[in-house]
Image (cartoon, rainbow, N blue to C red; front, side, top):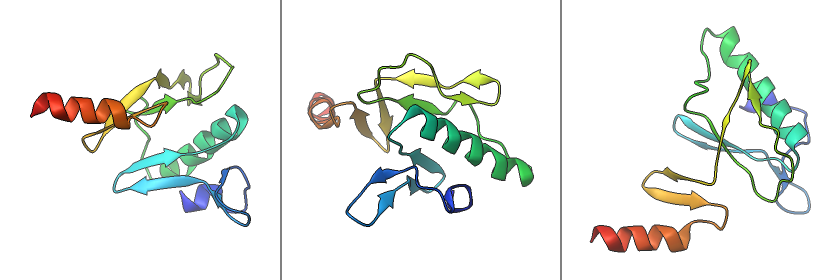
Length: 112
């Protein structure tokens, strides 16, 4: 990911001097952007580096969670659009547009 974002300013403003471009968790990656165009650019750039190494991003396992986005257009990976979701589970935690903590706590109580 570091190679595909080098020299680009398309993350979210983290503090006055820094931008947060992505979050890396083992073999999972979270891309962060303010605009659809920035996200599409990151997705395309991210797809180039693995291809040069003989790897590929699995479009069926890749999801898009939009927050306050008006466009209905999807993010493309190769020739297909990535699936848009309103929530997902990562490492046994529920993540949604509101952060997911309320839903996550209720789900954990339900399992107890």
